[in-house]
Length: 107
Image (cartoon, rainbow, N blue to C red):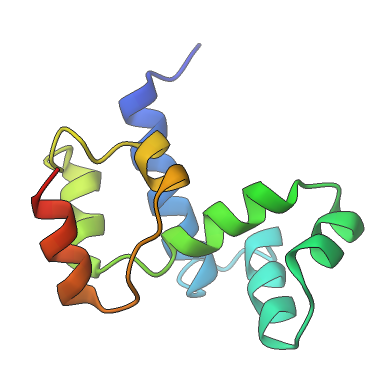
């Protein structure tokens, strides 16, 4: 069974957020990546050691820092039409949640 792009996007965001903040009890790669970043490893070093791409690690970690209400909108499928997986991969988000909200409201 193939997952539709919108559903896959919601699952990707949810998994990134839950895994990286430790809300799921998985000894997941994402948790390990987050710990490695906090310990000073680079994305390239993590990618080389895990068999994942540097871009994938960067993408997953960025998603973990979305404002909680933005994540909830995505999970409900109520995000602005312009907020797509592609957009998130190709644009930087501000660290400030309010700035994220303002930016995403323009999409």
